[in-house]
Image 1 (cartoon, rainbow, N blue to C red):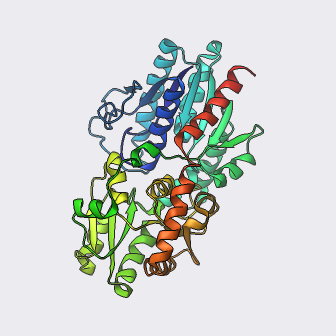
Image 2: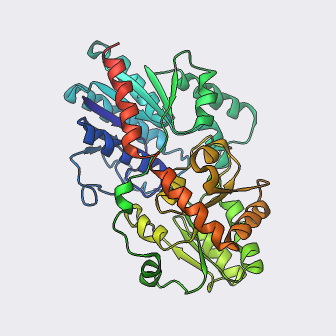
Length: 393
């Protein structure tokens, strides 16, 4: 089928939302679908890093000064999304897609409007929700309470009901949307491309290549360094762990890096924390291969899944995290779960795991084996079945 993906974001940047958009598209392309992605005017070209014929189409650079790549709301996105609406309309008119696959709430709204404007084409709309719009805005401190929050919640509920089919990236988000939509809502989990983790050097070689200190436990966080990813908990945990276990060594890889740089400077942690910024998604396997255990400090406030956990699992790492349904379903016994959602709770969990080498090895093996259940191929096959069901009801 011809698939027109709507990505209201500066695709491609090295963060979870973009990884889901990219890897879904790559896996659907392998099945045989023809993929076009409509997106903003900025973002990295994927053609130089992935073997693909995906056609990425960008809006015009009228807002040439807009260069924000990190996650989070911005009032200028209203204008970008209006331009994206025009781009999607023109692509739908000329390319005649069978399916509009719309990511995020803004993308769903754009896709729904185009579907209505070109109603005689009978294109089907698949809504790919990555989390809660309102809760994400609250987590980025763009909303607190009052009438504005209630307005956005009503807008979110309106968008949640659009389209011919809805999929989410987490079980938690699926349960929330099921109360709003009459149609069935499918959970299509983030996956991992296991091919990236094949033919890697030994852990000892990987550590030498990255010039990591010998004999220390390498504890790694990768991803966006913004509050709704749990970085407040992470930044609270790091000094406590290093104070109680001097053998620990942290890698913090992602952007924006100002917060972790400030922490390292103020607490004088330069000998125990490596900051990697920017983090190239395609370098991720090399970094994780050199690590001993990983951290996911995200709580459930935004209803987002944690795709980074699957990367950790593919690298055979145990994961210190909070006790969320999504985390339990991904990790099972490969996770070490904090007793409380706080920086101190996360620190205790990291300490318990980092002091137990046998447990690191045992949980790491479980992690690697469970990763095979969460490949992007399986996610794409599930989406493909949704496409076929919509095309041949």
